[in-house]
Length: 173
Image 1 (tube, rainbow, N blue to C red):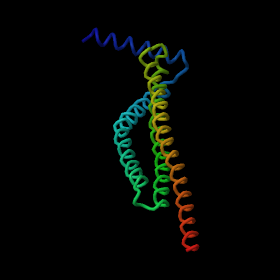
Image 2: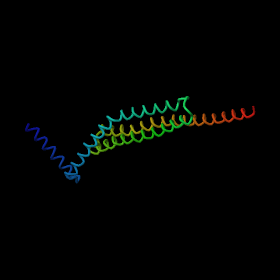
Image 3: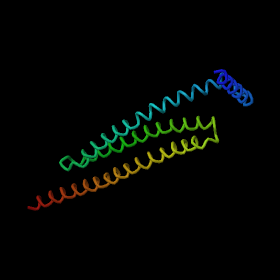
Image 4: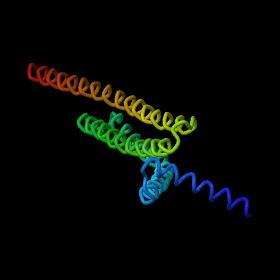
């Protein structure tokens, strides 16, 4: 036990020397430690929520896709569902990016403590890659949504032309 106490005393002394040399006061050091713990806790909860958030948005998006693709619905209702899908994707994108940015913030805070730590550097890279993954996934879904919007607009134009031709033919008879 005495050896452990001596080691801990030496570590505390070394840490005090480093913080003194860096000009960090004890309260600043404690404040940073508190911030780091709070950020870790926030990220832990956000990571737990992220999967549920993604599933919730995927389910809502699928309902809107089904409404959009329902050929029994009016073209205006289908276009409206597709527009709502685009709005939903934007909300999802913003929420997921905000969550991912919190993870980046944590990785940067941890790396600040030990910039030579390869695992901490890798954590930061992985956190930044999550942003790229979110962007790629949502961009792909937006592309599909915009393609369908164009198709629906063409279908509306075609329906208007067909109705106009039918009225013209009915007038001629």
